[in-house]
Structures are given as structure tokens and as C-alpha cells.
Image (cartoon, rainbow, N blue to C red; front, side, top):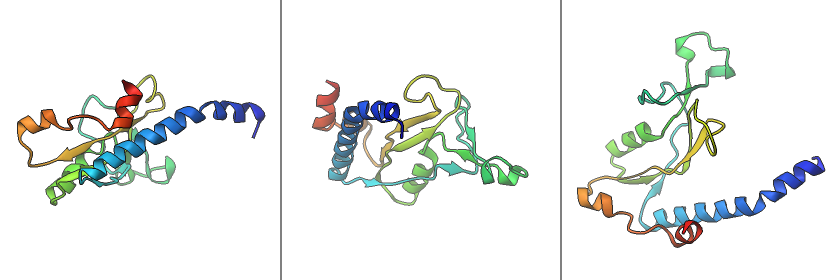
Length: 145
């Protein structure tokens, strides 16, 4: 590794450590609330149904797809698969991961990858959706206050 690369990456250490603390706090909070962390597929046979999002193609074999049966996409959102889990009886689920969208600009999605923290709590009253969660985990509140 070149010294300049080592310095560039070393300069990011504090930010990476802060990100890790925030992720631990978020995961800990959801775990304490009884949520199950899930991981839905990143590569799917059909892109999301949102017409305003550009799906990124990811064909079988990395680009030499032979036809429609080989078409695959990077997931623009875990929403569809999380709803399938909900329909199967999973009432408190969370996913902390990435979503892939083409055509987006600016950090953190400048590469077409953004971070999402979708969560679902079914069978809640309408008023509880707006009041919940009442406060973010302490580490997050301190970091962005």
C-alpha cells in the first residue's frame, strides 16, 4: 500500500469509528425493543416498482446476460421483501443495509449506494406511528444534536 493511500485511509479513522458506534447504538436500541434484524436479498429478479428510482442492472455472470431470464437488478429498497416477511408473521423487523439506485448524486449515494434503516412494526395504531420511536438512542442524539 502506498504511503499516500495509508494516510488518506488513516484520516478517515475517526469517522469510521463514529459510524461504528452509531450502528452499534442503533442495533442495540432495536434489539432492546424486540426487533429481529433481517437481511433481504441485494440482487433481485425484478427492480422495485418505484417509477422515479433508477434500478442498476446486475445480470448473471456480471454483464453477459443471454436474455430476459438472466436479468437481475440490485435492490432499490428492501421494502418488498420486508413486506413478504410481515405477511409471514414477522411483526417487528429491521434491516440496516444498503440500497442501490442509479442516477443519484452527491454523498453518500454518489456511487449509487445509499444506506437505509427501514423498520416495520405492524399492528400499531396510527397515533403510535407518529409517536414512535419517542427518542433516538443516546449515542445518536449526542452525535447529531
